[in-house]
Length: 444
Ligand code: AMP
Ligand code: GLY
Image (cartoon, rainbow, N blue to C red; front, side, top):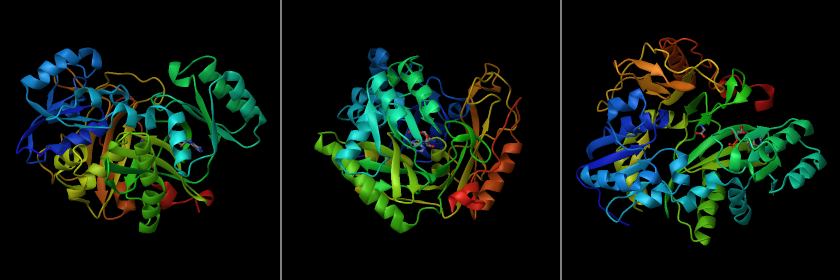
């Protein structure tokens, strides 16, 4: 479908978190934006950017959504999270005149089925951790007890970022397998497990826009998954990120495009699957070169907050071009400065958190003001109460995102910005960027 972008288009942005708030803010600066509609469950920040869709964006409401989309003359749908993509909502709502940004269910399988992703990588010689797919408890237990090296046990399906156990010994691996396949902690997502070698190195996030043919890599990001400073404690959705990372130079980026993105997109195409949307590779930079830890079929959170802080161009047009197969014509760039996002979290995260705690110190983002000065407060888990006050509504509450002349300055500005956000039990990591700013022996 090669469809011209109208002068004005009404847009529905699906998803309710920090990633979507950052996308919404840049979308609002597009001269092509008519009315922006946001998710019915949008956070308080998103509600400052657009009007809430009256329906939940699910297949079960398709009849009502179709009528509403027609009534409001919605011309473009942008899907943020993985769940609706895994449910096939990109396929279900795209029409010949209304493109959807976000891959088809078949293409999104790279994220919702880690066993499938492994098979595509194997067939296409994409470097990834050596591993095995197990579909029975016995096979998985035998495999982890016979191995001598530390391993990683992954539920093959979507488990909201909780299905991966990085194990230091056999006992942990056995327990992780049993959690997936015996206690069924992740439901159907854990009926198949992928068990792979544990890789060492620095982890980076590389996101690319893909329109079926053209693949355009965005600047690279380093996320910090663990909850505690010094990368300690349980994994989270991401405690903070910075962009670009000096760990990747032009030559390495070119090899990542050539050895990872191109063969993966081609491997899908050989199976009759066209990838359109954003393809996000979580990579480990090992001594033997970059290797894929996982693919996501969506923008990352908090990676997107740092990318959007630096994005220069018309985001609406670029996403439209990606969705309609004309990415080769896209023009955009990234600010020279470094961006850092530090996420202010609620006590207890990544476990249980309290909702409804009043949040103070938030600066509204004037969406149309692209020049608003940083730090930007991208809302994650917030809710607008009936009395128009903002309360907490999740673990990752606000992503404070700042630009700086270098990484140190960006980190300082974002960290200082976090001090201004107040709610009961708020906490954040003060060491985002530490693996580059103050590398430990293992990082060198
Ligand atoms: P995933 O959801 O597959 O990205 O896994 C979540 C996190 O687990 C990653 O961000 C890594 O920090 C870690 N991880 C996943 N796979 C491996 C691996 N093969 N070796 C070491 N760490 C891994
Ligand atoms: N920050 C990692 C993710 O979005 O999956």
